Length: 336
Image 1 (spheres, one colour):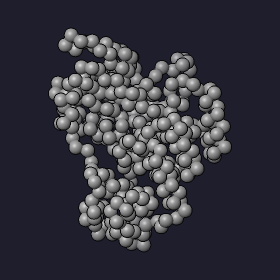
Image 2 (cartoon, helix red, strand yellow; image 1 turned 90 degrees about the horizontal axis):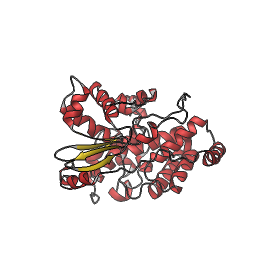
Image 3 (cartoon, one colour; image 1 turned 135 degrees about the vertical axis):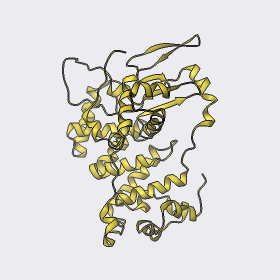
Image 4 (cartoon, helix red, strand yellow; image 1 turned 45 degrees about the horizontal axis):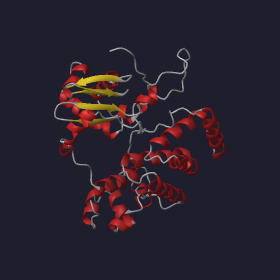
């Protein structure tokens, strides 16, 4: 196998790297190395199909073998499930093999327009969504005076408005993810409500879903030194006239599945692990908001009408009198 892949030092600051074991880091790099860097034709039981750049057909055993000594099949299975949660890859498996697709491969592995010119602006992150390491405020745990939640301040109200816009315009048709909520909180604290709303509005106009395009917009703004709405408007005007390529803002490339793979995959659908229930996602969202000193009643506005949760109930979770999941189970359950 010839060619090369790009690895940016920024990867070392990502949660997918920081929270990975040494074995998982080895597997991550191996998966990048195994992916096709251009279209490649394969033959499967007499049928021909094309694997797109960033895709490859493999097996858990082959990945373990390629990863080298000390990497077991179970290591690979665990790593792939974890990488899926970070939107680093998608994994379509049958009882015989699996099709791995590296998400956004074409964005951070494409050839430079000027091969001999180096640039520090190339985005080579190994995950779609930039998930920073989630840390717990120890002062909240150790000091009773710090256990009170931040009240519904103007900042929290603005964040609630942003979340309402996100749910109404960018989340329809997709399930709510605690990882997305974590990113939105981080972006709100870094960019403020006006710029984050501006990025959301651009993504909404392009009919994007989820956070992928928002992430790409904010990365471009950061590189360009955008500090205000006026800066953002000037950048977007310049971007529209200067950059008309298909690279865009980091939206996902439509996954191309061979016909033979679709047929095999149909029989395996029922074997896929059960996804988290809405109640479990809501409980995780509560704990996530608390860890960031945000009021869950503002960040997850559906708590009150869906479960009858009050601020006093949330305070019990903060004081560790009850877990978020047990609190929700004790209340009227939503349809899951």
